[in-house]
Length: 250
Image (cartoon, rainbow, N blue to C red; front, side, top):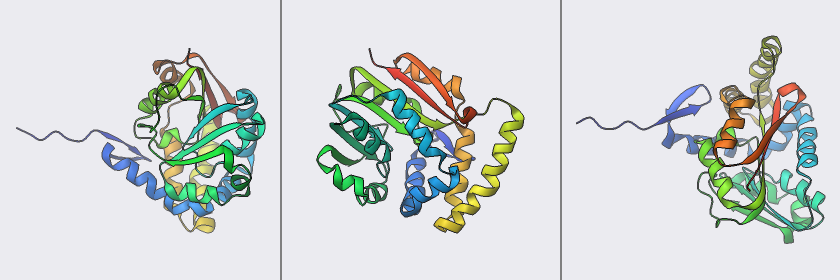
């Protein structure tokens, strides 16, 4: 009898056993944690901040809501959510402890400490009861999850009825010429920036490759619906360089 092979997944352009991916992703973000926020500004020329504000505009946080921000890293989505809501609670969950450590150092974390929790955890196996949160967000994180469909199912489980899912992720541009130009920038410039600023080109090479492997807007919309979310739709940002996907638990 032959031994069953592990299921495989993508780690950038490399095919790896599913059992390996989470550890490799942790390695990437542990390596870049101290420079993560700076690199986000440099790589996107600050545009990621505009995308996150667009996310908050569509989300429209309300007084007293509870947020679970998965792959929440250094906390910027939670800080924005609490600022918009006026009062409420945010739980920042990330697979990589060193990202959370960096987040706790930020001035906003101290100012909002009574309304924040920081939790190390896995998007595919959330350490929370069913029907716990009003809002679930994940920003530039779901493409790093080993099985994104399982993460979406977990999002549905922990949201209360009437709860809202919102995913911000890099996506696909609408025509080949624009995509080729963006790829030229991504593959040639971003790893070099990573080497210069974070002394780590390999991690940013992975991040660029992971973007290209992520499903396009319509395919991911189908995944959101398959997880059970109603009224699911998306909006392109910067012509589709990134996209917001929204859905409701009804």
